[in-house]
Structure formats: structure tokens, C-alpha cells
Amino acid sequence: MAAMGDARAASDQSCPISIDLPGTFDGVRWALAQVMVQLGSDRYSLEERGTVELVLAEVLNNVVEHAYAGRSDGKVALRVEQGISGLSVAVEDDGEPMPDGGLPSGAMAAPTEDLLAIPEGGYGWFLIGQLARDHQYRREAGRNSLTFRISVG
Amino acid sequence: MKLLSERHSDTLVIRVDEARIDAAAAVDFKDSMRRATQDGAARVVLDLSQVTMVDSSGLGAIVAVMKQLGAGCPLELAGLTPNVATVFRLTRMDTVMRIHGDVDDALSLARPAC
Image 1 (cartoon, rainbow over the protein chains, first blue to last red):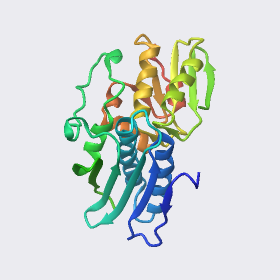
Image 2 (image 1 turned 120 degrees about the vertical axis):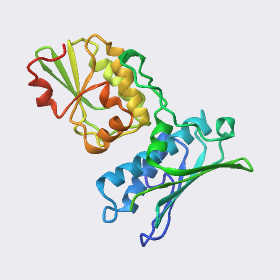
Image 3 (image 1 turned 60 degrees about the vertical axis):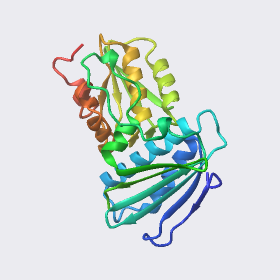
């Protein structure tokens, strides 16, 4: 899988992690593995690492599923940098814009007692909303740019 | 997807022998679970003790399997690892699904729900 994308290894942890990944679910898996290796386990607890992996998975899979829906030739640029108030993350792609030009609300359907009425989707943005903050979305020159922070580290 | 099935009288225990149920694996998981449960069992317990990552697509796939098995004898889960348990807690799925500490807990219930 080493040829899958371009992951420049950061020699010291203060350097941003910078990964260009293919806009496919397998590309996301590969990129997450790179990020988890580069983050290391010295600075981050198991729980924090899980949070980072989950949020990045949700954001990147949304790009694959929606911005690049039906395409497998898309590219996604991921930057992750540790700051004093947590990990700053930037995700950019050249896919379709967000519907309505803004971020989804992240609202989750009210819990139901009826097992057969539980939705099978719609959890992604809810989880992003729960685990990350300061989300900002911009559409410029045909490019999507999403930035947010995760309070870890 | 590698699933290991074991029958304990009328309970079918299915262990997911993979580290991830994620967007890349969700469709395969649903198909594999359909095959693993097609012979029918009164009760199905999904052992997630080898799974370290479930994302929203994986969660949706587990919900889909639960709905497919029907409400009569709902799918039960066992052995959630910490990060997987967090996803179920945040989405409050832990309040609607029956979750056991491990498979032994699930099998030793004096009065299972079905």
C-alpha cells in the first residue's frame, strides 16, 4: 500500500502531518493508518487516538461518499498539526460542494424504541459535531476546504 | 469479511475476525452477516472483541443487520473494545441494543430476552 498516496513522514512531532490520499474508502483506510503511526502513542492516550481516528474517518469518508460520489479518481489533501488547543485539521478536495453551501447540522434523529425504525445512516456528522469543534467550511475556486480542531494532546 | 460462527444450543455466536467495520468494509460485513445468519437461529450474538474501529458506516451496517434479523429476537452485541463502545455511547445506540461485556456473559444469562 506504500504507493497508494503521498505521506511525507514528519521527523519531529511538531511538524504537521501532510498526506495526499486517493478519494476512495481504501484510500481513507490507508491514510488513517499513516496518521495513527505518525501521531504516535507517547503524547496521545488510547482514547484520544480513537477520537482522532474516528473524526478523521468520518470527515474523509464523507468526502469520498458525497463530494466524490461515483468517482474514484479524486484526491484529498489532509493536514494535521498539533497546536496548544488541540489538533488542527484541514481537509481539501476538488469534489462537489456541500449541499446548501454549508455544513450539515449534525443533528441526530431522536432515539426510538422501535428497533426497526432506527436509521441506518446519518451518524457521521453527529459524531464529528460531538468530537470536534470550530468547524469551518469554505468553497473557493471549485475546491472544498474544511478545517476543525480536536481537543487532544 | 472473516466471520467465525459457533452454535450454543439455540444461540448463534458470530465473531468478527477483523479489526475494522468501517466504510470500506460495511457492504461486505452486511453480505457476510446475511450468509452467516441465513440458516436461522433463535438468538444471534455478535462478538466484537477483535474489532478496534467501528465508524458511522460500520454502525449503520450493524443497525441494518439488526433490522434484517427482525424485532422478534433482536441482534445482541458482546465484547465491545473501548473505542467501539464510545461510538455506541455517543449515538445512544447502547440504550436500544442489548450489549454484553463478553460472549460468556451473553451465554450465561439466566433469562435471555428470547
